[in-house]
Every structure is written in structure tokens, then in C-alpha cells.
Length: 420
Ligand SMILES: *Cc1c(COP(=O)(O)O)cnc(C)c1O
Image (cartoon, rainbow, N blue to C red; front, side, top):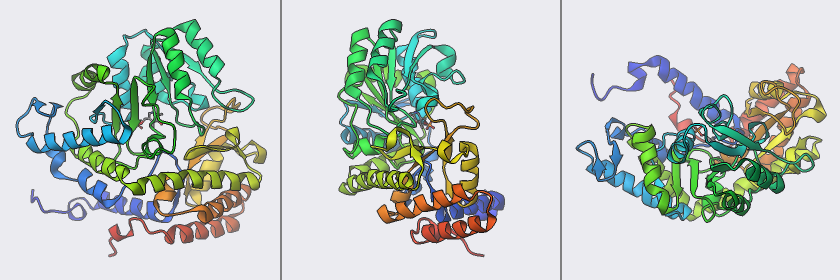
């Protein structure tokens, strides 16, 4: 195999599909709050020859030779993660957010132990105890939710459930909760019952790093996160926390759970941590939240409902019941005009999870493109027009044109498109 051959000549099918995906990302409006766009530096590291290297173990304690370069890469990634979040230790090897959480279970629990997490249908994540996930299958799960009145986490319920069930591990953090999480409260509850506290900031990590969302670092024993959501790095995971837990976590990641670390991804993570440490990133994170508030306000003024009435972060769940469309249908029609989001349950939803009464939307990706308040107002208009004219093909065609025109004003990866 010639080392210099390109994807285009070796595999035109995959090449063409990647080109189509570049076009989709370039000319659509990306509102999935767990997605973002990495820059060329992160892509370059992620696509580097580091993918070839086996490096089981930790820097300078590897099971393979030839690790000098990747040792230095991983040490940089660790040092930057610690600096970025102000933590005592970091393990940069988890392959994803789910694997990071699984390592925490492996580190502290035995199968059958009790775990407390947020209900999936009210904002929690699969790995926080869903019955279809390893977490719900192998552990006893107690779930807290939000209040009916204001859709906020109920501190009294959290404390009462913990006292009743005495979980060994308490998880705070969410995947569809737009408000600030009171990490001090969860510390108090964990202390009350002698539990380990895991804060899973997969969604908020970039905002936390920038100081624009509360940090759990002072309160949690372990902090887990993804690196590809608001943090704007490669698709991966990260574990951090108090020094006393470093060894048990490191061992749970490897050899407990994973094999060789993905050194190319670790290099890309190091790059994204460096970017997140730069002053620009704070401006970005602030704009993400300002944009989310503007989007939420604009949707409310157009007659849509937002769960909990607004947002303190990068995301929100739109309650579609006032306009009598399901989350499933909304996701579908929005997709058809180039607006990407995902269906989501609203608290106390009466629809099954495959249908849902809401959609979850967020601003990290659009903000990375350089969009601001004015574009959020336009985006809200386009969402509203789409949802209210679901069967009007002519109207939908107009919206499709406007989506393309708006995205077209904020170039992203179009230099990667090959014209033949
Ligand atoms: C996205 C997410 C994860 C999982 O991340 P993956 O990289 O998709 O495995 C875990 N926890 C929360 C809260 C998340 O939002």
C-alpha cells in the first residue's frame, strides 16, 4: 500500500460520503446541544499518525516500547486538563463520556450496589442508571427528578431519597437540564449518607472551564466529562478529581475497562484544552449562553414554551404541546429544512420516549460559527415557521432557502469541499 495514497483514490465511496457530510454541516443550522465544530488544529491532531501507537499504561509506565513522544503528548494533555478545571488529578484516556462514567462505577462499586442519579426522562443520562444501560442492569438505581411546579431539581427529594436508600454513589449532572446545578447541595447529601459524589459535566464542561457555569470541582470526588460538547474538542472523555482517588480511577480505566489509549485523540484533546485555556474561549462560552437566552426569549415571544421558562446554559428543551406537534415530527420536519435538533421528553411527558413532546436545542455549534443575537432571532423565526407550516411545501421550501443563506454567511469547512 503506498503511504501517500489519498482517501479519494482508495475509497471513493467513503470520500464522497465525507464530502456530503461536510456540505451538510456547512449549509445547515446545527442546534443539537451536544455537538460542536472543532477547528483544523484539532482535526489535524486527531487525524495524525499517533493513531498507530500502542501505549497501554500511563506516561513513563507503559507496557510497550517507543512511547517517548506519546508520553510527552499525554503529559501535556493531563497538565492542561488539571489547569483548565483546577483539579488535583486527571485521566485523559477514557474513550468517551460513557466509558468515563463506567470507569467510576468500576472504581467504587460492586454489582448490586445502590446508585442515585437523575431520571433519564427528566434530563439525566443513560449511564446514570437507565434500565437499558449497564448502569441500570448491574446496579440498584434510585432516581431523582424535577419539581412539577418549576421543573427544577428538588433538593428536598434528593436528600430524602438519599437518606432512604443510602446510595454508595451519587451522580449529579445532566444531558437535558438547562439550569444551574447546585453542586454544594449534592456534596451535603453525599456527606449525609457517606456516598461518593460524581459530577458528570459532559454538557457544561466548556462553560465550566470558562467560569460561566458553576464548577463542581470543590465539591465532587470525581468529575467526568466528554470533551466534544461545549468543550469543543475531539469526541472523547475525561476523568478528574481529588488526588486521593487518582489511583483507583487510573486502574479502573486501565486495565479495568479499556485497552490501549487512543493517542491521536489524546493529542487532539491536548490541543482543545490549550484552546480552552486561551482568553478567547471565555468570550466564546459567554456568547454561547447569551445566544441560548436570546434563542429562548425569541421562541417564547413567538408563542412556544420552554421547559423551566428559560436557560442558564447552552441548551433548552422546547415544550411543543402548545402547538400540538410531537417531538418526533418536529425533529423530522426541522431536519427536512436543514435545522438539526433532537426530540426530547419534557418533564412528566405523557408520550412515549420514541415520540416525545419536546425537542432539545442549543447554541454551542452556531456560536462557534460566529453567530450572535441577531442570528438567534432569525433562527427562532425559522424554527417557528417550520413547525407551524409542517404541511406547506412551498413555505418549507422558502425556509430551506433561508437556512442555507444564513449558514452560508458563516463559513465553516467549505475549503474542505473538493469540486470536480
Ligand atoms: C453526552 C453525555 C455522556 C456520554 O458521552 P458519550 O461520549 O456519548 O459516551 C455522559 N453523560 C452525560 C451527562 C452526557 O450528556
